[in-house]
Image (tube, rainbow, N blue to C red; front, side, top):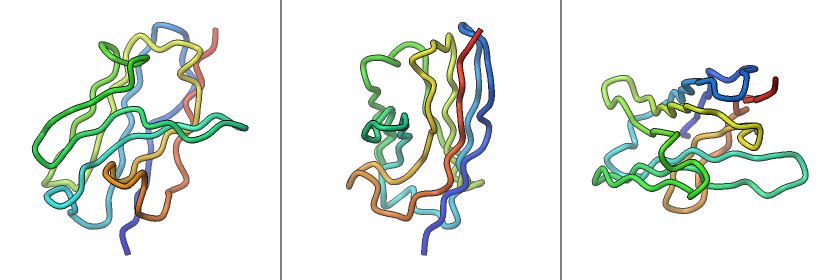
Length: 116
């Protein structure tokens, strides 16, 4: 069983930054692409960023140039550095594998609220 524990969210003003972390219970980075997703109440979960096993990175258009996904293999942790945050980035952020749209059980997520 693979578990994800997200952290690092909070309340930030527009233009601010946050760094999200996702601790994964097992090292699956050599087998699965990893991804960050986000969800707003009443809407479908959205794929935000993917880091493949081959180190290819993809972002949804709305976060390109502002968000950076990375991982630390030794710590079994995936990160999402978010800069120049906008109100539309407000959501609950989750991490999961990025090949199958979230194959593993979802964690509790971490709330990001961008507001002045």
